[in-house]
Picture 1 (cartoon, protein in one colour):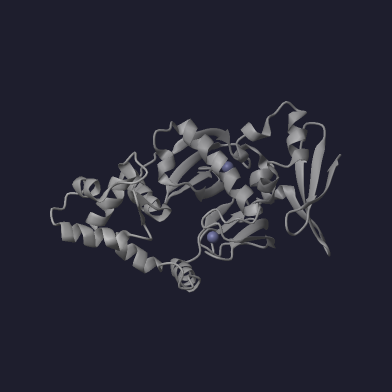
Picture 2: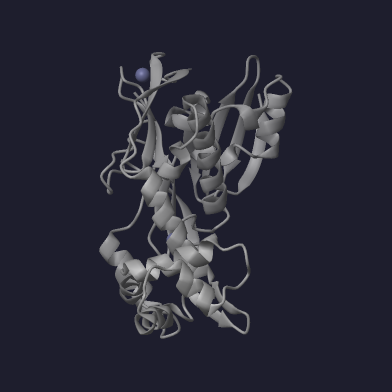
Length: 311
Ligand SMILES: [Zn+2]
Ligand SMILES: [Zn+2]
């Protein structure tokens, strides 16, 4: 069978850490120092107190009153450690900076999402390869849609645990579909969805599997961040979901492509719809079947569309 799938994977943590320290250039606090600053309960309480406040700034005495620490010299010491990077000191008092907000947000996210458990979901759609019912599973903060019968993957992408809260199974699937589209839009526009760094896009051929998951795709798109090494591998078709010619092709057939889960579109999952038609210059073509007409979209190496044709 032709390979089916798509996935994302970060670079190794070590490489990521080395890189971010190396690019700090003395202007920002290295990650290890930043973690040391917030690895204190008192400091986290201070950040949380500022986060809960409705006012733009909180006076020293009010803030001290919110945090359960009698010793005012100790309180002062911890507040001082946070000031500048996580907390801003103004004439009106103390206020959270963006870095402080991020800390509070990730702590809160951890408390209501610790080791989230999601029972496998019946997706309600069929495998594009064998026709069995698809199943969604959740592990390692990634959601995967796969066929329990033939094993064909229909994509496995990061989905932060907060996304599972307060949603029905159908809503989780809908949010996942939207997220996958969003990740690919950003990546194709050259922006890393993890760190906002510069992302390069290329088309790769041959089996992958160099980061633990064998995608089994013979032709695939690889987006890779030059800064944090985050990597997103996917079928070529996924990058065509908001292409005007493709949207119109579906509209004429009474289907709203934006409301159609990507895993129900075989050309978004399965690489038998993709072929390399030229190597100089490099051209790949995606075949999108309609009932009596087929749309062919030809792309260059950087995923720019060079031709569309109906037959
Ligand atoms: Zn199957
Ligand atoms: Zn990045």
